[in-house]
Length: 65
Image (tube, rainbow, N blue to C red; front, side, top):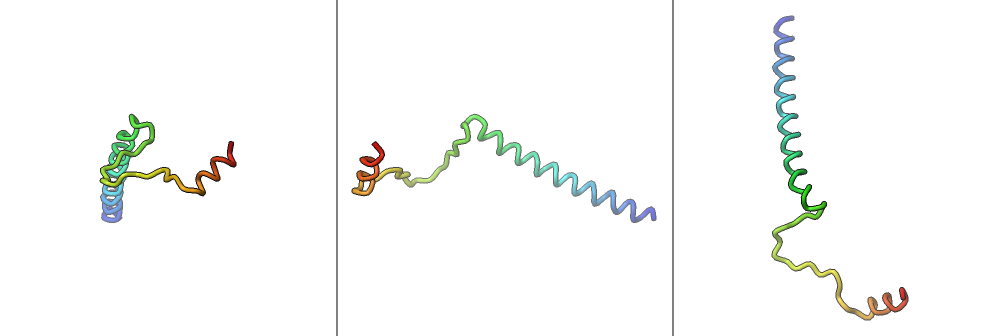
């Protein structure tokens, strides 16, 4: 009986430690986005293209005005 209790307590302590470490690392990553207003800043060398002038876009903008 004593051995099973000790085993349970050891396993519970390990699981609790792993959970605490996971929570700390998650909070660290959350802190990095606090000052950026939710915007993720990456290191990609690619340029993001948001708009490319085409006939379809011109028709869309003309219809929206």
